[in-house]
Image (cartoon, rainbow, N blue to C red; front, side, top):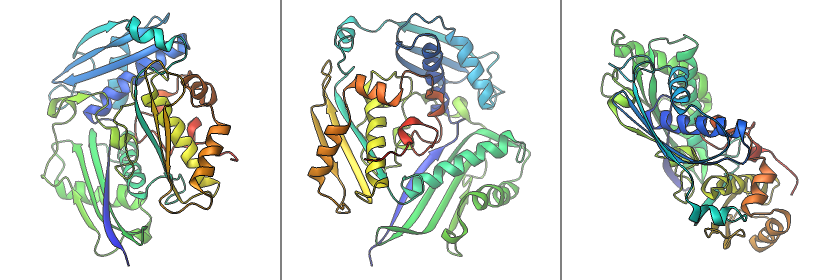
Length: 369
């Protein structure tokens, strides 16, 4: 029997990096509401009650980036500059320019906005065709936010992280070996109360009972306290949670981040398209696992290469699957944008708890291949 452990992590929407991702995506969505052809590449940096927003923006939209940032912080639940950040009085600086004309000349004719490699992945470990460890980690993180915002555990703060270690046997999830949760909290709450509440009202509400046993280990706020959080405890930056955003380390990553970028940036749009194709390869029974890679050149519309790996689980040849992909899908940036409807303001839906595995997103629908 082949037996091994694999671990993935997730973060809550109040993690400082996710704050920055969400501000960047909120600016993108506001641009797209007014101008479907907006070109956006937005970065946010957060530290010590200060927000810096910078990037390139070419659009007819009229936006108030500062107002968007303050509303985003309030919606997350930040309140206090002494423990995380204060949306009312934090300093916000903005440095936004237009897209470089050297890049624009290639994008204007339908080419990719940059060179690079992108990956897509799917497997049959979960109903959403995601790896089991990252699926469970995301569900825990989302539950932490739910019990905080719904006042079930009102002493929790916005900032939190989860981590799930899965024991595999013969490449199938068998049990959960370890669960780690660290979540910001009010100072008056005792650590034992926090640990008991998070086990009973978060972990046991999320994780299927059959994966938990007497040997499962729980680490809840293992340092003993987590009062100071958000950008006061750690800087935040757009695009720093790329593994959380994708497959939890279970599949390759091309290196490009997603948030704050419009769909002419193939870092984002091609990764979404490859997830869509990989998911449908698995859902249609062509393989139990599928990873795809594609590469692009700046200003060039057609992909330079396409690669597939079904890890020996395919029911038809990989060459046949590649032929099917090439015949059925237009993998130029414009083709991807049109097929998935990526000029719509949908991107704040993607920011938290993974960009994949959410049934409401267009690249998660299942079709007949």
